[in-house]
Image (cartoon, rainbow, N blue to C red; front, side, top):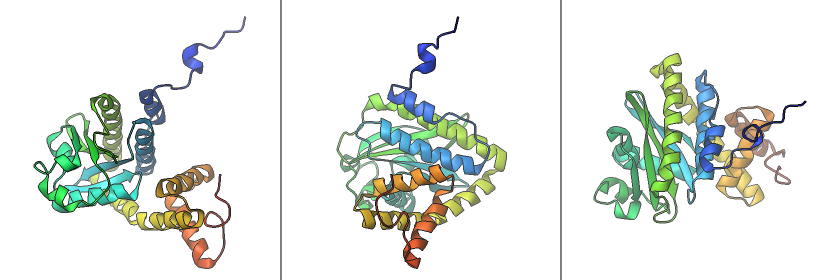
Length: 253
């Protein structure tokens, strides 16, 4: 008699939390693994939290805050303001190991320099500290374009994702050391310029928005098993050399 598969074995993840946890399974062994893991994390959280328009991960290593993964360039802009004024909900979440669930228009008293400097359509922000063991590594940051986009019902999923991110960072830091991880993050940040250029090419060629352009790059990077920055450099090079692939013709499936 053939054993029938159980419902648990055959049923796909059905709740937002199950989908995020399924996306974040696996073991990390290097900084390269960590970069891909954090990219997967931010997109998975964005896709599974209602009214969430963007997600980023702030990582603090050797007293310097860096955005290690993000879904849109707008995330980088908001983070850059916080890093420049050395204040804001994400840095506060890291320093005080507390969750911040705020509407930015009403946050002037808590973070006056940040709210005065930031110019964005984002109205809501949630920040959860990345805590693993006795250490805090940064914050997981969610952004919404409407006021009151997030509520306490979203916190359980965000806490789980933040814990996964923190554990992944702890694992890689133990394997490679803080200085090496920091250096590799700097290299990753330097490669963002060409990724943003490639997104701009796709947006102009195909009349799509930034999120769609990034999804095209990310999908082809995974399908071809090449690094995102390598694929982005190819797209930019194609424009410079007058040839077409991702940058011209029909939008790739």
